[in-house]
Length: 413
Image (cartoon, rainbow, N blue to C red):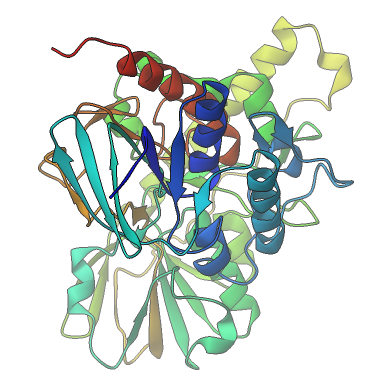
């Protein structure tokens, strides 16, 4: 049994940022990583994926992108290289190839079981990411055996798909990117659209993420939100990172030949049923996009910077077919594959501590978990709107490291 003050589970951006802040406080710690540094980025992403944030926004405590393409978007090998370089720079005490198998609460802390021995610690940080498991809806149980079921964690490229029509369920960042790529491969794609967040890649000559950064949108604190539970469930931004800095939305996909249908409401006897709310969902997404653009325009005017940027404008509303189909026989439609781009959830299957709510979500207040000395990082809107991005890890880690350090000096109750 090895002992240390803090065990950090996961060596991605969140775990590494926490390591830096703990080291700055002279708190001894170890990072346990089942693979290599940035393992999920290395092994659980499709081949063509790029970050949807521009390179200049890849920032961690005391470290930032320093290449010659600040407005570009990193491919996965670049992301893993960036994080590995950061781990080396800060001399992060990472134990690679170490899979956590159990976490149990003990008097004064936690026992962490791994395939390479056990650790005991008074404080523990769960930094293994928000995308450990694909969140496939219950409706998937009705898929006929003749149709292949796949998640984005399994998808690598269109060449691995069966010939035939592909139904992509979900129209957030993952869904629209996969729909575009698969359609371009020559397969017909049907995209099932529910709630989504539409954004342009560029507005008034700047990347939309630049605007969200400079106006403070991404720094919004969880205490400033009326319904933080709802905010944490908002779908990911409908963006893609490409050398052309292209916008990817429902209109783009429709123009490329993708068929757009409503949310998948049911599957029975090989028949897919789609919601009739497609028009309403798209109208709502357009309204929210325009509210953000209003916020940007107001910031520009309030700071007297109109001359620095292109004039304000608005984008074409999302075009929806007059009568999108409400159902289809998958066999008759030639559907051979369904890709469930319906989100992700963290994997805490090894956590034997009573900190989960009735829906299996971990109970926490801005990353401070409902158990002494236990913390979580990397979840959507954990402490700020940017919490789940590389750029958000540093600020969250600073706050939680301060709380952790104070807890070590707090008298026991």
